[in-house]
Image 1 (cartoon, rainbow, N blue to C red):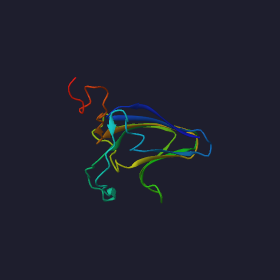
Image 2 (cartoon, rainbow, N blue to C red):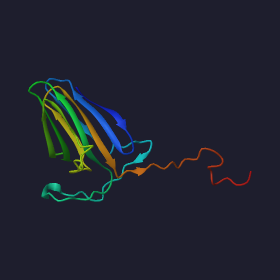
Image 3 (cartoon, helix red, strand yellow):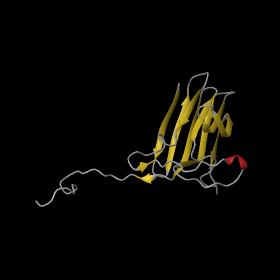
Image 4 (tube, rainbow, N blue to C red):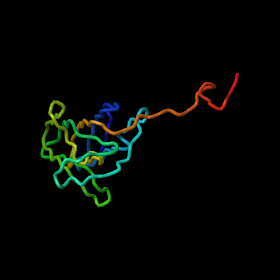
Length: 162
């Protein structure tokens, strides 16, 4: 069984706890659009361009995106976790791997950088056995959600007089 829980979701940060209990392992996908959007206050923005990062350049992203600011993991003995970005879910083409074993953490919060490679792509956690991972992501590029509903006579612009 593979599961994910949202531990924190603000307009600028989201934290997931993902785990697998099956001895054969499992996969957990994190969608930038559906999982990371705080539906009460944010609207997902589709990227207008998707840079090819394999050339090693520094690219500017458009649209909604998440950067990795921290990873904490614990795995059963002799098991590993691969955290990657999903470039193409059909083939699948994956890139930007973290290969993790045992237990440990990467906390980029105090560092002068975050992992921003393919920031607008979904994230896949591949466990080859039981384990857990807490992953903290910085959110950028969402639009604020604007409420357009009419809730009373004063919100209805078609009514005059009174």
